[in-house]
Length: 241
Ligand SMILES: Nc1ncnc2c1ncn2[C@@H]1O[C@H](COP(=O)(O)OP(=O)(O)O)[C@@H](O)[C@H]1O
Ligand SMILES: [Mg+2]
Image (cartoon, rainbow, N blue to C red; front, side):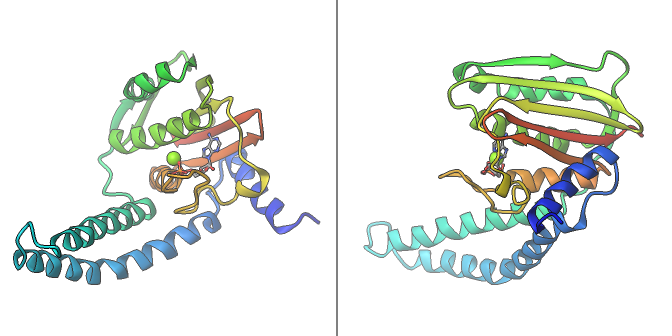
C-alpha cells in the first residue's frame, strides 16, 4: 500500500495520462486560501483608505511620514498578493478566441529571450507540424506558459536546455515544457501547485497555482513529470475544441 504522498503524486500523473478531470484535491488548498483572501480584502481596503487620509496630516519631512509610507507600501503588497491569489483560484473572465498555439509559444519565448540568452539556455522546438489552433484566452494561456518557462529557467542557473514540444493526443493539444534543471524533490511534488509554496529565497509561490487556475478554467489539465537532477517536464493539455 503506497503512503499518502505517493498516492497523491500518482494522481497527478494519472490525470495527465488519462486525460481525466484533474484532482479536486489539488485545487482544495487554493480555494480555501482564496476564500480567506476575500475576507481580508474589505478590512484591508479600510486600512488603506484610512492611512491615505492620515498621510494628509503629516508633511513629508515629518518623522512620522516614513512610517505612513511603510504602511502604504505594505498594504499595496498585501493587496497585490491577495488579488493574485484570488485570480489563481478563479482567473478573470476568459476572452476565448481561436489562436495558433505555435504563435502563442513563440511570443512567450520572445518575451523571455533576454533571459534565455544571458543564462545560456539552448531552446529546442518540436512543434506538431499540422494545423494547431486552440480556443483560448491568449493573455491567460501565455501567462501560464511564461510562468512555467520562467520556473524552468530558474531551475537552470548554470545553463541547460529548454525543450518545447506540441502534439495532439485524442481531443487534447498537449504542450510539453521540459528543462534540464535540478528537478523537484519527491516530497515537494504534491505541493508545487499550492498557493505560496516556494523553495526560492525570493519566490512568491503563486506562479504554478495561477497556471493551474488558468489551465483548469480552459477545461485543460496540467501535469508534471520529474527526476531530481535530470530536470522536469510540465505538460499542459488543452481541449482542441
Ligand atoms: N521547472 C522546475 N524545476 C524545479 N522546480 C520547480 C520547477 N517549477 C516549479 N518548481 C518548484 O515549484 C515551486 C513553486 O513554483 P511557483 O508556483 O512558480 O513559485 P515560485 O517560482 O515563486 O517559487 C518552486 O519554488 C520550485 O520549488
Ligand atoms: Mg515561479
